Length: 147
View: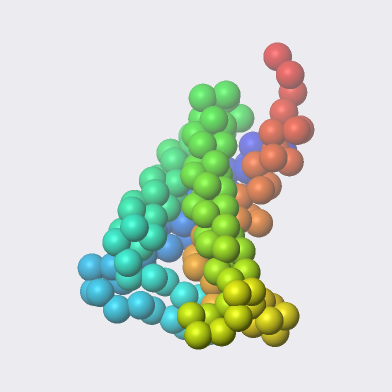
């Protein structure tokens, strides 16, 4: 990946990631869940508070990797930021999967097909939106020249 393109891409991704992290913290401090269109931000302390701090850290890692982006130490900061996003997105996807299998408290043991599929409908947390854009680091990693 060209250094200039990588710097621009991961700079924009870092700013958006930082905005999502700050928004997570603000919603958590406010104490009310926030939903806008297909975006949902939880106000619970674990996902909103700690998750917000992790997303802010990922945004800062992206932004700190911009100077001399192709140098291995700077590139590893962007990779580390992507891994943080993958971990959070993975836990959110795991939560969706585990919530979709059992039925309701008064219903059957397993969820119906309609109930199962409705679990995967929007709204989604911010890291789910960041996940596909963070995967670009794998393309960039595969194009790196081996030393």
